[in-house]
Length: 574
Ligand code: DGT
Ligand code: CA
Image (tube, protein in one colour):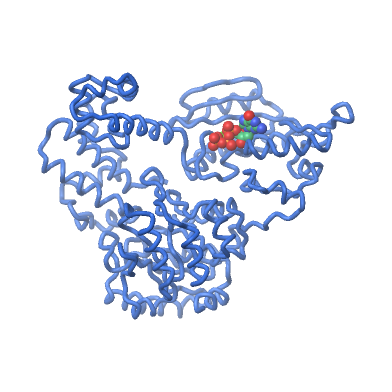
C-alpha cells in the first residue's frame, strides 16, 4: 500500500530542492519545506483530510498547495513538479537523494566540477577532486561516500509488504493461466523477513516450457534476465527481480526447503544430514550408505522426519538455535493470526483516523475479534488532531452507547498518549485513570541521546496507567532508522510494572523487530500485536506483526491481545 503522505512530502521536498538549485525565491522554497514536514507525519490520515475537504487545516498548506496535494492523490503525479524536473539533468536530481548531501553542495558540485550523476560523484570523491572545492573537507567526502552506500543498499531490498503484494500478482496470474499442481513463493518472503531482495517462486507443472513462457510474458514484466527449460528470471516494471523454477513433484519438498533458506539454516541441515550418512540438496535426501538412493524429497515434512527433526516453521529458519531445539522436539509453539482476539491500537476520526468509531468497530467484528481499543491521539499532538479533555467526554459517551449495542463485543475507551521530551504524559493522571487502556508513544524528539530516549520510555512504563508502549524504537521504513534505546533496561522496568511492548504491524514500522521480541520473551515481558490502523484497510496488517512475533519465537501466551476479553480486563487491572 502506498503512503500518500510520504509521497506528497517527498514531492514537496524535491520541489524545494530544485527551486534552490535554480536560485528561486527563498520564501517560496521555505513554504514547500514547511508543508512537506507538516504533511509527512500525517500518514494515512491525509486521505481522511482530503475526503473531508480539510487540507487547509494543515499548517502551511493554503489553496495552491491543497490543490497540488489533491492532484497527487488523484493522478499519482504533479504536472508542476514534472515540468520543474526538466530544468535540471536527471542525474543531478539523483544526487539530492544521497543522505547528507543538500542542494547547496549539489549546486556547487554541478556548477564547479560539472558532476551530473552519482557515478561521477563517487569517482570525484575517491580521486580527491572534491577536496579542491571550497568548504569541502575530508569529513564531507567520507560522509558523501557513506551516503552513496546507504542509497545503494536501500535500493537492493524492498519491504515485506511490497514483496508479498508483488508476488501475489504473479502467483494469481500463473494459477489462472496454467494447470498447476502446486505453486508457492519461497526465499526470504516465505520466511517473512522484513525486507526482501528478490522473489523466488517454485511450481510443479507437467509442462515446464509453457510455465516459463507464461511467466516471462506475464503482465508487468519489464525485462527477461534469463529464460531456460526449467527456470527463468525477470524484472518487473518496478525493477524487482522474480525468479521462477519449475520442479518435479518428487523433489518439490526438497526444492522448497532449499529455496526457502535461510542459507545458514540450509548449511546446518546439510551438516546434520552428513552425520546421518545422508546428503541433502534441492532434489532430495539421498543415502550415502546405499549408493545415493533417494530417501525423501516430496514434502518438507518427510525430509524433516528422516533428519530426525520436528517440523521447523519457515519464520524460524535463521540458525538461531532452532535446529538444536527441533532435534529435541522442543520448538516453541508459535502464535497464529487466529490467536489474536482484538486490536489495542486503532484510531478513529475523533483524531487522525479516516473512519468513525462505529465503522472501525464493525470492521473489527467482521474479523471475529472480541474487542478493540480506540486509541486516538492526545491533546498536544495537534498535527494528528489530538483530543482535548473536552472532546474526550463525547468520545466516552459514544463508546458507552456503542458498547450497549454491540455487547458482548467490547470497545475499550483508550488513547495513544504522547510521551513528551521529558518523559511526561500528555494527559494528567486524573484523565489517564478514566481509560480502559492506555498506549503511550514517542512522536517527537527522536534525536535525543540514547539515555534520554531510554529514560522517557522508562518513565512511561512507571506510570501506573500506561499499559502498552507503542512502536518502541520509532523506526520508519526509508525515513528513519530505529532510535537507539537501552531495550534491556526498559524491559526490566516493563517487567516490574507489567507494561507490554507493542509490535506495530504497520508495514513501515514493524517494531519491535524479531530480535527485540526474543529479548522481550527472555525478560518475561508481554508483547501486544497492534495495527495502528488509521483506516479500515489497515486492520489487515495484523498478519505482518504476527509474522514478526513468530520470527521472534513468540507463542500466544507471550501476547497480551491473544487473551480473551475477560482475561485481558483482569490483566489490565493489575
Ligand atoms: P533475499 O532474496 O536476499 O531477500 O534472501 P533469500 O533468502 O530469498 O536468498 P536468495 O534469493 O539468494 O536465495 C533463496 C534461498 O536459496 C536462500 O534462502 C537459500 C538458498 N540458497 C541460495 N544460495 C545458497 C547457497 O549458496 N547455499 C545454500 N546452502 N543455500 C543457498
Ligand atoms: Ca530471494
